[in-house]
Length: 197
Length: 194
Image (cartoon, rainbow over all chains, first blue to last red; front, side):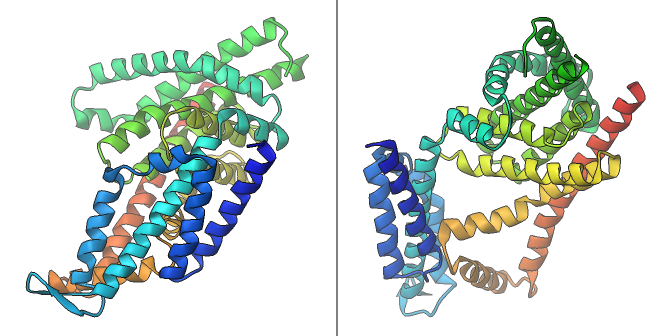
């Protein structure tokens, strides 16, 4: 699929989903949601697989299955308690809408990359974003080591959770101060090497 | 010459602070998510706001906060996970809010407190918007009805749900003010050292 077609399909999915947001929960909204799911599947079936895990839907499912015991007009009995079938239907519509939305979010998450963000940032006037990204990736290792050392020293001097939480401003000061020091050293290196930004 | 050095300094500082935020989002945010820590979004917003304020102390130029936020967004996008869009939107909105406050009103302690508070309060509309996007129209009336019925079932006073919402919103305010106080303390210390 060409980038242009893919972009058009994505716009179509977003437009159809936006329409579904303003529809009341029901069959028509569910049908519009189905269109979104089909369009997502056409573009990236992996997005549907990513949201298909049971653990995502277990707790919302329990909530919407139990809610009719308390909410809605009772029209049947379950284990001796009144139960609303119409409310269960509405809950199913909410759950289906949630599935449609998460499939769309998974599609967007899989499509949007750091490279796209860099291109977009440069387009928005954020100069040298490629250089920033490269520097950030190199600096991650240094920052991680700095964080581990700073937190390690801080914890050794303040055992227990209460001690750890009490002096959080000191920790924040140490972490940001060390980060600034690291940045200062890198800035000097950039300047000496004649890197232009 | 001096201008080139200043440009390099600002670029490197905003990049490293953005990377620090991205790294903390990955490590701390991931940990909070794993242990099901309540108010993870607001807590990470507080951490991010402090980092953005610290970055602005080092590079006080309009656009510096957005630049740091953009780096954090890029780092977040490089991480694993199927649902990065929500946190990415949170990071972007938070950096835009702080940028607006600090660019319009300057970089004082009061502005830091206001900016951090605003960044943490962003979690409140974010929650309602996310729920509307997730479940669609009508979800809030279902929530309200379920809350009313639960109140009656557990013999809780009328309007108890309002107290729960107020405590939840209050927790955002407390986190925002705490972050603001930390950022203001950093500002005092940095200016004393400077």
